[in-house]
Image (cartoon, rainbow, N blue to C red; front, side, top):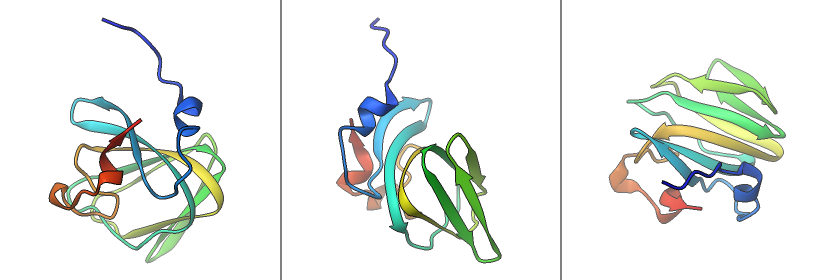
Length: 121
């Protein structure tokens, strides 16, 4: 067995595209994904799972139909399953998502996966 820590900053330095999660590890049926975000994403929900946002650098916001949450560096937020939300960041923000394997970041199913949603770095 080869034991080596995953360096998040090193992984983040390998890509520059926005809103395109990159898988960096798996635990049971969950994937850890890094993503750089800026600007607005689309309104969406995940009917079968909660979604975890962990801000590594910068700050982001998540709009809900009835409010908003700000998540700063070193903070995390869990969006409950089925809750419609729209993430956004005014400046580039680096985040980690923890999601079930096969979850598409717009709330779709595995059959709708794009190459960007399943890229390992």
